[in-house]
Image: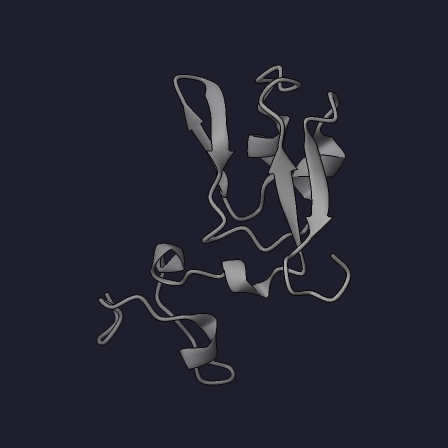
Length: 101
């Protein structure tokens, strides 16, 4: 592990153009990048897990082959999960305090 990486740093603490070693993504909580957040409706969800497959941030939480939520510490709000959900169980909403609530 890169020296000084043991503590949880946010993306703002990285130097521009900073290079990191492999497998460091869990060391950086990037959820504060969002302007929109996915809201999951467990009643509509059929656990097809397409959202989990396509999520580039591995922010979809799954236990026992079922979706159990979204890890907002890492979700960047790209909306891919909502676009891939065939059952409209994920809806994108403006992040609180973003001015368009």
